[in-house]
Length: 462
Image (tube, rainbow, N blue to C red; front, side):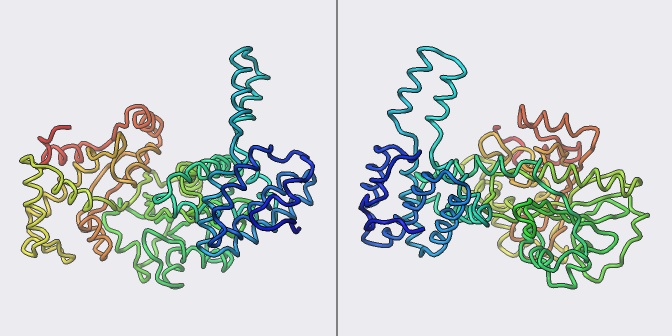
């Protein structure tokens, strides 16, 4: 579909009959804003949004899907600067009309009822949400909108004024990707090559080193599960890798060794979740992990009744970063001690060695500091560590710390090689979750709490 009129002018589009299109005040704001963008790649961005204007005027699903597909193609063809202009224009476009909101709010205040409340809700809902709903009807629309949000997220730090667009997309994605639409599939060596290739590409915790590595991760003593959505049948949304073991794993090396012996699954007593990867950056903030773990646990319980313990072997990605921030943050005696300690670790005389030859006092104090970090360090009210936030919110218990569990370059850089086990005790999940949700309480084993009390930061004011 071609929209008539010169770029940056109302043309035939603005003069056409209303047919449900945005009101005239919107058009004036839109074209005034658009006119300032025509000196760079704004002209093409304007044309994309004019297609959005046309899409909102369409009443038929077939014609609407055709216009939507044309808009998405035009968006994909924009240059990086064109997409910048697109988002800048979109931030001020397809928004609620202030006059209509005021009228609806006054009507509700004057006569509160379900009908006046419905009109107020309709007046305050951004037209962007309806635009995105209609784009979703185009072929490939869901995938294209996820990609559009991925592009948007990369700009938000420098352009927080675009957060309204993000809120609209996130609001819709949380409805479109709720648990009722998700399909849990086990991934094995018979799964399509397209999906297997995407596992290799997306794996973010422990990189998959080619096909031999992947094949070992899909052996009979392993399980891999992923959530899929009907609109994206070959695109995993999130996947989890599980090792069936005879004991609680304290190091990741045997789990990642492509040549490791395959355990008879009948001998397994533990299920170790050693990698959880969110695949779609554009779905950030849409939660899948809790539901995934619960469904995986249920499937494993049915398949392996003798497996009684479900636990993770988890990275602690921000421990070293937090420790450096603590050393540089204050002038108290505890912070000074941390600064001196960290200087010793980084000097070489106390360096953390993958061989395990680090001095005992270095090892012991790092483990104690890590226990303190996981139980006390905060970002606002929430735990500082992102992995901790995820598992604790799902009802897990912080159970054990493991020295030099990950001696890879990344493991040493992020956490001095320390990893931890979170245990999913099915009898305590709900209670632990409620404690975290209400009070942000970190449920930890007595060993973890003891180590935290012995840390050089234990006397630090909360």
